[in-house]
Image 1: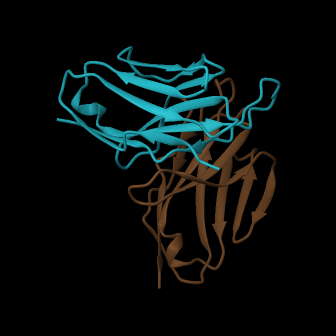
Image 2 (image 1 turned 60 degrees about the vertical axis):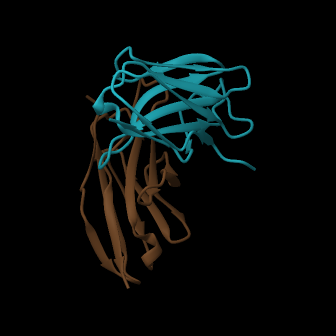
Length: 118
Length: 112
C-alpha cells in the first residue's frame, strides 16, 4: 500500500511569492495534518483536517492556509513568503475515527517538501 | 505553553549496548505518547506509541511511561549502527485538536 505522498519534494521560492504544497493520505485515512520542521527542531503543528473540516490550527500567521478535498487529499498554501518559512513541510495522515474518545492520534508522515525561500 | 523536553545529545553508545532516550512533558493531561525516528534528511518514522503507565516492548525497543512523573523513555537494546538517527518524542496534549507536540529530538550515534 502506498504511504503518505507529498509533492513537490523540493521547492525554491523568493520572498513575497506564494507556494502550494500537496499531500495524499494513506488509503482509508480521513485525517491529514501539516507540520513545519525547521532544521534542528522537532516538527511544529500547523493544521489538522478531518473529513474536509479544519479541526485544529497551530500558532501560525494567517499567511498559512489549507484545505482538504473530497478524496481526503490536502493542500497547504503559504502567501507572502518570508526567509523564515524555509523548512521541511510534513504531511501526516491518521486513521482517526469520529467516535474515538481517546485521541490516540497515530500519525504517519510523508517524505516532506523541502522549501527554500531566497 | 505545553512543552516536550528532550536532551539534544548527541548520545553515543557502542554497538550492542542499550541506548536510553528520555523525554519529559509539561501537560499532565496528555494521553498518548509517541517515539519517532528521523534519519538525516528524511521524514519522521513512527517506531513506538504508548498510552498506559508501564512498559511496552516491540522487538529491540521498549517504551516506558510514568504519568505521575510526566516522563516517557525509549530503550533500544542491542543497538546497531543503523539505529543512528534523531529520535523525536511526541505527545498528544489534553484539549488539543489531535495535534502532536514534539520535542527537539535526541541525536543518537551507535559506534561500530
